[in-house]
Each structure stands twice: as C-alpha cells, then as structure tokens.
Image 1 (tube, rainbow, N blue to C red):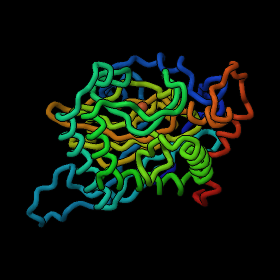
Image 2 (cartoon, rainbow, N blue to C red):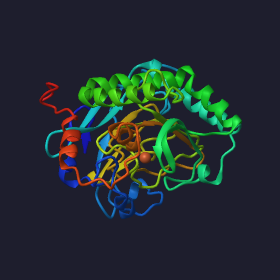
Image 3 (tube, helix red, strand yellow):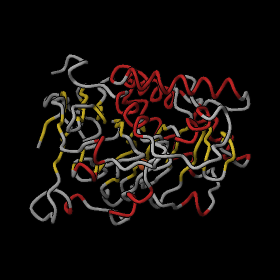
Image 4 (spheres, rainbow, N blue to C red):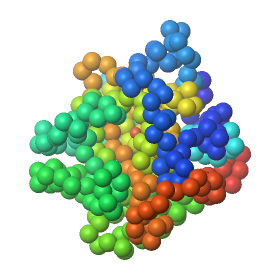
Length: 350
Ligand SMILES: [Fe+2]
C-alpha cells in the first residue's frame, strides 16, 4: 500500500508493454478483450478474499472538521489535502497522474458539476448506443470534434436539438469550465512537452476548418465526454481510438463512499486507485486498460472526461487529408511520443 504524494513506481513499461496500432495514431484493439467486460467489486481485486492481489493507492486526507464542531462529518465533507501522485513506469517516465485537489472552489465545482449532470439526464434523449456501450451501462454524450469511427474528416459531434442545447449549457457552465481549467493547469505543469505538442495540433485543426467547435476555451483537448450516471461505473476497457501517447483526463463526480467503491482500476499495472468525488486522473487511455469498482446501493456516480482522438493528429500529419495507404510500423514515431512525457528527474522530484 502506498500513500499519496509519494511517486508510485510501477513495473509497467510504456515502451515495451503498451500495445499500439502500427501507425502509432491509435492503441491496439486486441488489448480490450483481455479482461472480462463486467463490473468488478473491490473485494475481487484487493484484500484477503481477492483472487489476484492488486496494489492500492490510497487517497490521503488533509484535515477534517474538528471534533467539537457540531456539524456531522460525512465522507463528502472531509477536506482532501492537495496531493498529486505521479505514476512512473519502469523507465522513469511519468505516464499517469492522480490528483486530489484541495482547493475548496474545485471541490464545490465538482459537486455542482455532478448536480448539473444529474438534472440534465432527465432532459436528454439517448439512443440505445448512448445508453449502454462497451464502457458500461450508463448514458453518455460527447462534445467537441473528432475524426474516425465513420467520420471522413474531423467533424463536430452531431446531436439532436435537445441534446445540443444541454451540451452547450454544460460546456458553458462555471463548474465544468473550472474543472477543465484546473486540468489544463495540471497538464502544463506535469507534461509541458506533451501539452505543447497537443496544443500545436489543436490550433492547426481549428485554423484549418472554422466549423470545428472547441468544447472548452481553456483546454487544448478537442473532445469531452459527459457520463450522466446515475451510476457511472465502467467495465474494463481501452479507449483505443485515442492518441496512444496522450493523456485522457477523468474527473470522478457524485456521492458515493469512495473507500468502498468507485475506484479506478489500472489493469496493466495491477493497481487500484482510490478515486473520491472531485478527484482527477490522467491516463494514456489509448493503451491502458481501466475500469471502476462497483458502488453501493443508492449511491450516485458520474464522470467527465477530456481526450484527443488519434485520427485528428493523423489528419494533420497527412496534410489535412485521409491517409490512403496502410501505414507502416513507425517505431520512430512511438519513440517521439514517449519522449513527450516528463521524468521525475527533470521535474526535480527525485
Ligand atoms: Fe475510458
């Protein structure tokens, strides 16, 4: 068991263990089939009854209301300390981050964001595919723009009038803007090279087509997913359409006892991370199998993610055109991608 703020050193090697498509614009689809796509309970992964022992990264509290305070202290009223746990791979690169924000403004934004998702769900209309997908059984809508999955060029996600209005309301709301801006600050701080790389591509795309809509003005990620709950619990999956050497930013939202459930499971690392509402994780979701543990009866869980589809980058590299011939394995491109992650050494943390 490791406590927050210590870097978490894993045996996983992004260079050797991650499986990517030959062109290195996407993760490998084969990876997704390796873990049973169902909801897993914490006890199946951690503790005496677990068949396989996973490591547990525990959230560390800053302080709680003093004992003499008459207000009852629930798990959601505990103030989290400001902690960031860099997860380091076997070659020393920081390939994932767990962030437990301390700022009461961010905590409040996360609570308000959960309320907004809970209220908005009732006004949305979801197709069968939007209600239940390979990630789990909960409705989700995407905002921003993407390429691939049937789109012949980078295009805004298409929605009916009702959903479009709700997505505009969510992306322009202060709580979601606050969460997006916070994630951008963490991104710039912990992976400045990767941030600059993504920013350059993002700006080129926006310049190339004025119809493309940026979901958040304070983010350089072109797409965002709103997971409306009321019980957003993911099956193990890989988001293989995402750029394999980039981070997907995931906020945990809602009201659940995070010591019992709602953890994020990083299957390649055999690690379970405590993931309280209002905390954030950055993972290379295009190559990293992840899921959540089940939550308790009567609890609510939502999530908000920001990401970058790999096909957007391929479009720019091909001179704003579809790649006609099959790409050859690009080892040099993978090495370039790996070099964009920071190391503890260069951040002065070792
Ligand atoms: Fe995911």
